[in-house]
Length: 91
Image 1: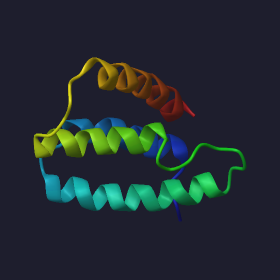
Image 2 (image 1 turned 120 degrees about the vertical axis):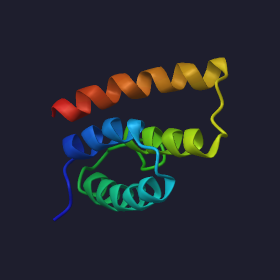
Image 3 (image 1 turned 90 degrees about the horizontal axis):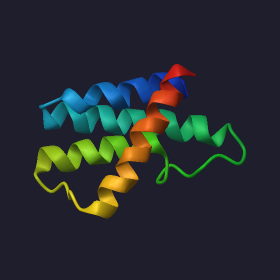
Image 4 (image 1 turned 180 degrees about the vertical axis):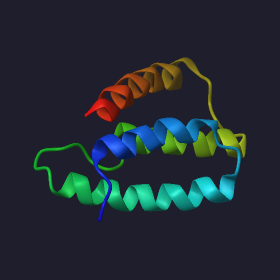
């Protein structure tokens, strides 16, 4: 059974403390499968690529790879992601 949006959002927040890239990549793939399924069941929802859960996972992977950009535009975009995730995690 696919995980719900609140569960996926909480997981995206929790993974921010991870340090094992292999584990993060595997979990990311599973999360994207479940998120895609959840979004497909919700007409009018944003795309997988633009979702706050996706952006949080990708940001973590960039951090682990040492390629995370800390420019003003990226910081502005990510600050909204954390706010969105907290709201999604609450359901």
